Image (cartoon, rainbow, N blue to C red; front, side, top):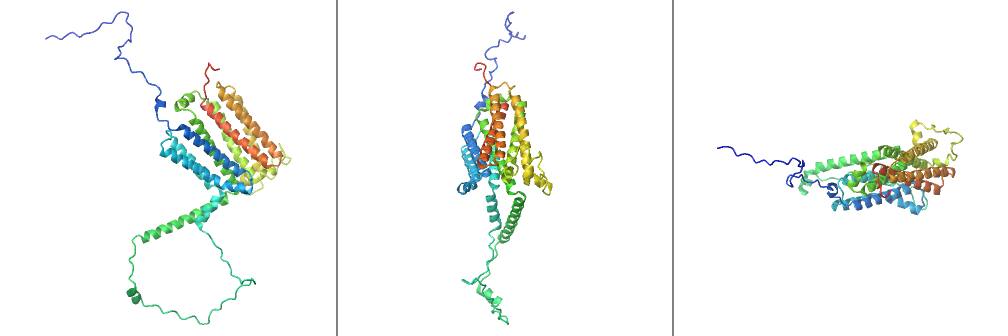
Length: 413
């Protein structure tokens, strides 16, 4: 039997190449896969982050400003309120499964910062130390009423009293049956011993930390913790303000050079605020009230008077104020460079964000000088702190828009 000839369809001479039948056509790619994923409650998480920013700034203000006695009592509850709002928000969003993908881990980092901010309070330090070491009640010497004299000493008898006769061991054994020892008794005693050792060791470490971290240093560290919580929460709120697809598309058009400059201004501004908190805690603003010199000289004469030398950087009023001034000069210079560089950006929203941040930066610098000349007055300190914190948040927003710019359409422009 011969083979059957294969049926081949001859193409026309002028037939278009690539004209397949509908069955041969490849499936068209479907877009929107990123937006099709579960998004979670991005608006609720953003509101939660905004509340953490507000509470962190309130804690910072209560720590840095001298308040009347009734208002100062609220300062103790600022740390627990911050941690409580974080815990309630995380618990509600976690149980409701409203966290967007990957945001649970970020919230845990914020929770750790809130916990450290709570434990950094001096009142909490004292309560933990008291709970670990227990109350030490001093022995009181009894005195006679009305006269204030000591009571007469009780003379011991010349011959010791005869000992009370004790029953024989056999009689005790017959009277009371011996209880069987518990099998868990050695383990319970050992666990109690280890718990006591751990408590005493922790109390000793806390006492050493309190000696190393003096009250001004601890106050500056609390300011840094409050700023970190506010900064991270504000950045997360900005990220949650856009969808994942918008962030991926915007990042492709980000400006790395401008983002790097904004990062430099942000980190230097953070250091400057820490130095300002240390200046306020040490009362160094009322020591040298002239500007641009310090006591008639560029470098204060007693800047290195403490021993050992490292103590001058955290305890010497002259050196701490000098470092605060130098950091302020560098911050203004770097802010000018970032502002000039932002003028070349192709995104109008980014240019506006850097302009606003630069205006607040210059206002903070002017208020810093005025506060210094006014002798560190309380109202000027509060105004300077508020402007500096707002400047720092506006710098974070400018950095965000440099990394994730908003593209302006040609039709609108």
